[in-house]
Image (cartoon, rainbow, N blue to C red; front, side, top):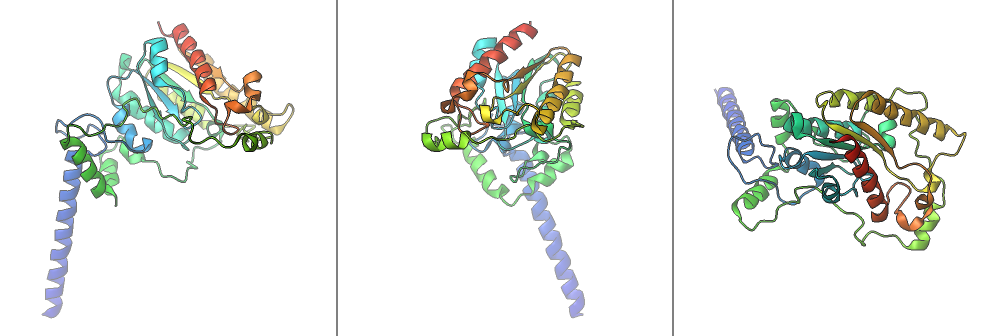
Length: 326
């Protein structure tokens, strides 16, 4: 008798928990805390200020933008606002610091799904050493919200069952209900060259004087990132694709005859081949030696440059876009 009562109690408890979980999930779906556009409700556009990973869904579906910048912090300083002024194409920065090609490809898929046909005029991809790897397994210790950008409704709903979702729901409700609530910058630009993170000059020069290998280590292939990027862009044949190899400090350029040079050359050729095969595609190589790559005042470390070099890359990108986008 007691056993039957305990079983009934346990079943009631489980049923109540399932009901509460379903109600919570339904509430989260309707409130849409990351502004994915999946909710049937008409909500205020945008999201509160937050990290770029969870902001990608809102920014990547924003119809006001016709171009996207994808990659990590190595392409982060390229300004969507300055590119718009130079090309007339409204860009959004969909970067995620520390991420690699798998994350960028998921973001690209989201952007193209929400900008079909001529709505996507251009895509800029920062090709750093992670794009040269023989596999696409994420190496970032900070989890990436693939579920947020997923094509699968079930995967999205499962991803919503997060331990911190309750707090985010409250923050988003506050954003939705307050006319004066601060909105995260729609174009996603985040300037890390703001004067706060500069190491002391002698320390920076000492670190930059040490050689670094940045070729990616993959001398013989395959290069699945290039293959998968080409396949993904098959959904947008009329969209310009700019493959940007960001600048590195001179001591990070491959030494002639080294294994690092062989790996760097093989990776470059994989993406150069993509550019040759696909119309409206250009490879812009910032890893070519020049005076600016020998100036330690233009770099934070071997792979992170400052605004003057970002401006130079923007000029090259803008010229390439003017050449291919009519």
